[in-house]
Length: 410
Image (tube, rainbow, N blue to C red; front, side):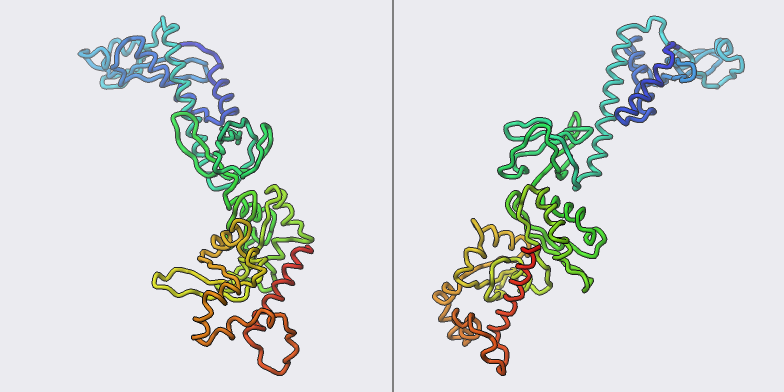
């Protein structure tokens, strides 16, 4: 055997401490490396009964060949005579298996180099597997990373034991990334490669907003308030629909927090990205009206078609059309993603000119779409009459405006 002192245990413990590779993995890798080096040394591939043994207490390592004790030796590589066996172990008997030390005396530089290559390779494989397992378990969660370098298209982020890649399509539009800056990222995917696993991260995934709300809003973490849906255009605007089964809890108010403290923390984390908190409703009409806020809605009509697609026609006042659609269609696009409904928005004038004949023939023109100036009349002018559908719509709008005013004040 070869005397190497306490170097084996010290190296194994240091490797386990620095890289998290278990000591047993290092010892096993060292044993395999010794067998590989021995095979190269004797220039023979017949090493089926050869193994390396390590005595940590004595600080020794050696290569041993297991041989069967026989009367007559027919194969020197697999058998040993009883007389020779008893010189090694006096208690040897026929048909016993005996480990014989075959460590070459001139186990020199070439063997050591071969052993080093095997050990290095095994350690890298063990490290790669540990990192792969770690980040596969973290897939779909938020981590904090340090920007390592900024490339023409990608941003490389240090996330601990490996580096992650932030592709251009997963970067926030208009965001300027600086080396050394800490950022919160979402682990999108983990890909196994021949070297270290490649971790793909994102800063635009809607899950980032959900995780931030779960961190900042205890009611969401406790399950009192539930996030039903999120639609996001990173860097610009996010709509999030919330609900609760507790009648004493206001889900929107819980997300906003006292004096808007909770929502402001999330907005700051997202670099001043606008966030609309929507009250979820099982009623699709009410849900669509809420999703299109802050625009006022005259009516929502569910469109029946043969394909059973979820489609709705929304009518808004003329001065609310641009607000309902949003800049470059952003508001209606986010509402569509949030509700999963196809939304067709038209102004009152468009409905009057394009579809007036249809509503007149059906007798619903005056009932569904009253004159715009009538919407401004005082509801108390006819106190004894039955509340019309027009006034019910106005009442919904008035309540919605109060809610929006309270949110802005908070």
